[in-house]
Length: 331
Image (tube, rainbow, N blue to C red):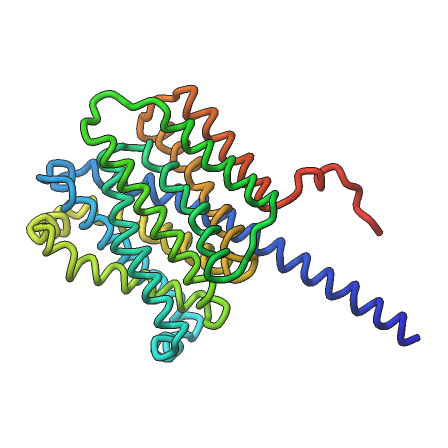
């Protein structure tokens, strides 16, 4: 009798574990989709004056990054207020995991997101898949610091994702004199996002991920607007953008999408681990390029098509064994 109860309990635990993992995988996949939407929206905002005619190549990206992250933080603040979590924000900041997540927010926000938008400004949609190599760096850092040793299948999937990014960027576009600098900025973003993913996976397992994401976005937005924007000479541009109105509206919607993406990404990291969570998130490289082709007039090239397919194949390999598609469900 006891043996039967134990078997039933084991079966229920396996079912719960399977459901928990499935939820984590879906969460990570949607984080990639929403970040692809954010990427497209923030590029649209940059087409409007005064952002489009801004001098230099740092001011406009950091103004966009600061306003986007601030809006994302405010959207998440409303969400957490509705869920009764506002007091938890202050308590989280006073914990060691909370401070670790602040460090991750600094790396992933002012540094990584700013570098990513500079990359987009200099290299266009070609910067998107290069930044998607953050999954590779995340897996490496998770292995080093969190002892989350990836399996051979996960490693193979990560390599395939990187190969897809390389294919997409194989041909340098015309009329982009600072293309290489843009690619290097995107690579810097990838490294910093890899570190952020590792830190969020550590902290996210100990604190509420919704609260952690809120802290991340507010902290990033405030640091960008108060510290970085003045340093790059963007205060005048910030004032002009706020007065213009239309680009602010686009950035507000972009912030909503970015906030949702980070919320889902942090949850995925905490449920299925940093390597798999980031591997699913990097599918934004596919969505970002696709949306740029459909809505922003990006030319469809063989490298973009092939590279995007390769990235999706790599992400599937990371998250599951493709042979599972052909297995019959056991009773």
